[in-house]
Image 1 (spheres, helix red, strand yellow):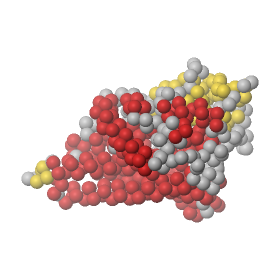
Image 2 (tube, rainbow, N blue to C red):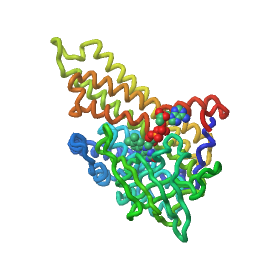
Image 3 (cartoon, helix red, strand yellow):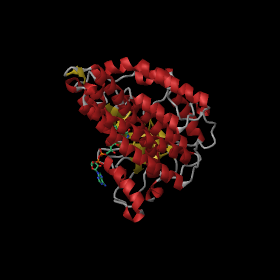
Image 4 (cartoon, helix red, strand yellow):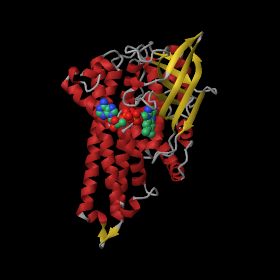
Length: 414
Ligand SMILES: Cc1cc2nc3c(=O)[nH]c(=O)nc-3n(C[C@H](O)[C@H](O)[C@H](O)COP(=O)(O)OP(=O)(O)OC[C@H]3O[C@@H](n4cnc5c(N)ncnc54)[C@H](O)[C@@H]3O)c2cc1C
């Protein structure tokens, strides 16, 4: 599998030997997630219809201690396995892709790289605070001119005394205008045009007027979730805040995206589950031509297809989560990491497209009401399309899957 070489073996920061949650603790998390979802539903609905941010997403997560679900207990996390965490995200995403995206940004691609690559001092500084809800995290890889190929990025860093100084713009960053710290990737200042330049990763505290963030509002969905751009202008950060080894940023980014993609795939399964439940309820209740529309065979066909999208996505998400746990339990094992990367790419690609089909069919079952933000299927339709784009597009997922099977010499781009 040729993508073995594009992902860094994690350093000392592993969760391999950390005490995992007991079955009872996992069950408690499931109960807390359910309570969170029930409490957030009416608040989220109003915020969504008003196209406003929903601060309750984070506040209630704090109340239910959900801000470090997969983090070790020693840092204040709940230490659940990848499958339990994935199932939590499935449930959360039934309340909206925007709600789930907050958790992906904070935990799957925010806390995860700190845990995997951070020094003990960095972990002590950022993980307990982020698990408590005192430090919201984000992941800043994409730039205006560097998306699918982050190596075309132009953000830079330089060392000045006991500080790193960062410059440049990051674009389309989830939690980007609300985060207290962002994992930022940047190249050495002055390395522009050099073929062998390598990016490094940093934990960037966002305080100060040298870090300017702006929420982006021109988007057709995910209204309650923060999508932002930010500019760093000679932005100083602690000289202790490089994440992992100098020059290892690309590999850290690729490894982090494996974690992020599993969260997206899980979220898409949640979208499908909610569309199925809504479709079943509506098809039983709504009557046309003298009977419930659920008795019309063509409506049943939509329901059968949504169910097939659900069951296939469910199987792939479970397989992917188990592969991630095996990889996390074997730090440094490149083959396990490659297997997880592959299984998660398949799950992400499939589930995001399956969700797109499911939302379309659910909207159709709802008829005219389906084409309205007042009903859940259309809100899911507006939100879920981005899942085929962020954290690796459909095209990049297919290239990864195919070239992994074909072999290293078939990489579509190098
Ligand atoms: C709501 C939202 C939230 C996001 N959150 C984050 C975040 O938290 N952190 C972050 O870093 N980024 C985030 N992103 C950015 C996202 O990851 C990028 O948009 C995505 O990776 C695609 O990059 P791009 O938009 O620059 O598209 P491009 O890379 O310009 O791609 C345009 C098209 O060309 C195709 N393409 C590109 N290269 C190839 C190739 N080699 N072969 C075949 N086709 C190719 C793509 O698949 C796509 O169809 C977010 C985006 C959105 C919309």
